[in-house]
Length: 309
Image (cartoon, rainbow, N blue to C red; front, side, top):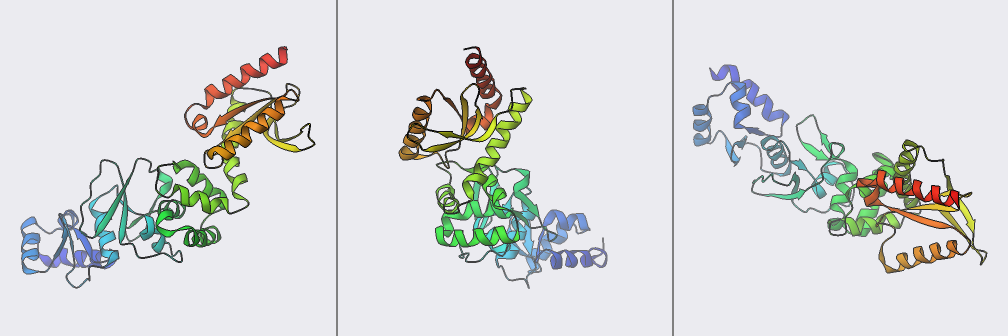
């Protein structure tokens, strides 16, 4: 095909995609493999990586690298501090071009740092009109938290909540991704703990799922946030309670109920509640994720036994 037919389309692609293009796209637009090879030999195309080029007049800065990676590898997206910068969050240090990829995908582009994750959900992926894929704003911040540090991450969180999403959305993202060995978890946990409203947002997501399963199994509806007066005059609030049976359910997530001190407080509360005849069952985030029907079935058995007694 004559260059007069395909070259304007290639030039338009360069203009719309930060000067980067794959050989497959050029073939789709009408250029032959031999023509592409000759252009590369003449310097009309500058190689970025195998199968992807840039226009020689385009400096090899962050955006062409991001575009090249996204065009070359369909499952890769801009992530971490790079995504935070693209979302316009303040106080983001220059940590190089960072991309997120699923395990098993090995993109190799010089100048690009690739992080891999076993958990990438559709909600984490945002595609721009220029073809660059980004991790969502809350996912970007959760991933980049350790690179930012607590102060910068706290500042970015406030901007995120003001411009892109609610605190509940950030907390939901954190709950979905958090793991003690996962980079970013501890820093993000510290940042969220410093906000007074975060515990209620964290608990609300887990509690909603538990309540949905209670309804699905047709258990009697519990009283949420039930206030129980202890013998020493102190009040505690139980996540869900059946006062007639004196049974309570506490919904725990390691992001909140973590460490020896908190574990001691939880057991102390349960013991004090038992002195006035209350049985407290605890449902963990792991139960919510993978064993919730069984946990609620166990709760149904507990309620039946207490009611019979």
